[in-house]
Amino acid sequence: MIENEPLILFPRAEQPQLRDRFDECFRLAGIKLNIIQELSPKRTTLAFVPESSMIYSPPGVKFRYLRSDLPDVGIFALRRAENEFPLIKNFFAFIPRES
Image (cartoon, rainbow, N blue to C red):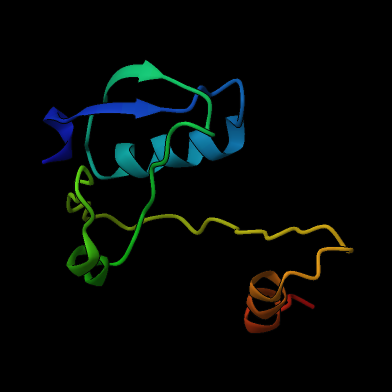
């Protein structure tokens, strides 16, 4: 269970709304986090992913089940208008636009 795993998360002060949503997800699942260190988001990543992601597990990445009625989290994607890199253009062509 994730409750006993040491976690490194980003500080609430840097992204308070996102951190509050993460904390809420764990609270709703009845899990008390074991946060051992807080680092800038550029150095840490915590992600909620579907179970199917486990088949692509790179070395050093741990997956843990979190069973809960998780709240919705809005996801936004931004880019520089002048960025013509094909990967970026294709990604933005692929994702749906909210009206």
